[in-house]
Length: 350
Image (cartoon, rainbow, N blue to C red; front, side):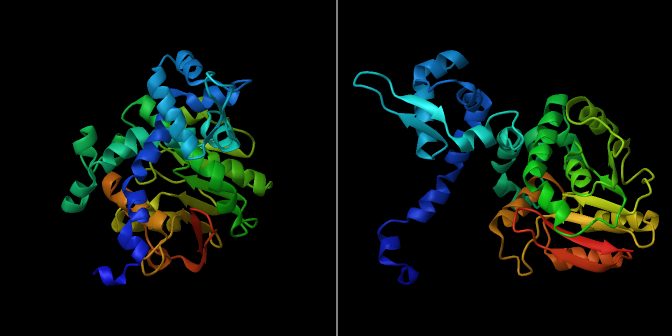
């Protein structure tokens, strides 16, 4: 076995150790988000010592200094040394200020919180999920495997965390998702499971003549209106369950990170329902992280698929599987476009 390793790999497995310890890097970032370290440093007019950070946040100086030094080590914060016997000072980098402090247009703060408090506990049971072949919501949150969204929306706080995660995702990938394929020919767009309306913002900006209806569960719509986005002349919310209730009529139906949550049978049920109400010449746009056809990558999508095993009843798919579902549901003229970012798009027409 060792004959295929280089001498440096035999001497010390640097890459393997990086992977084994990688969760510690994630948790250091998550903890700093939860504690408010990035927010404090991003808004401070000057660099702060570990003691000043600790006092401002009401946490231990020793633990704060260790965490700050680790964040400097992974190049998320920066440090400056003062004169002898004076404390070192810590400040925010541009990356931390833009992506990890709260409130910014590109902030991933809510994503980090959701990963830390919801996804991470589930990943502690990855071996169980693989062994049993089912999600781990019951073991971690006391919710039966089939009640997927009760696990996500188990309290208002948890709902806001998940909705914040969705808002983060589309602040980064939304523009590419709605412009990878020209959608200018579609005027009345229905975003099924559109959550906060984050993708709708990109749609109405990219295609000024379009109107968008975001269709989601009543409790989600209520929270979205309250905390995320107001309706306008070109953007409205519509409450309902896309499996149970009648769908709004539209030229284009968008499913963003929806099909990967569900079994193939449920995916087909939803796509056939969309086909039934879709206008002739209209279509459906899938926005999903696509596996390669041989499932050998991308790595992030492979890890997403493991996450679906632990959290839902679905999986990530290669383009051919989504294409097969679309054709089986009555759609044709399937066009696949990889964006070069996390999420890719597939457009199919009726």
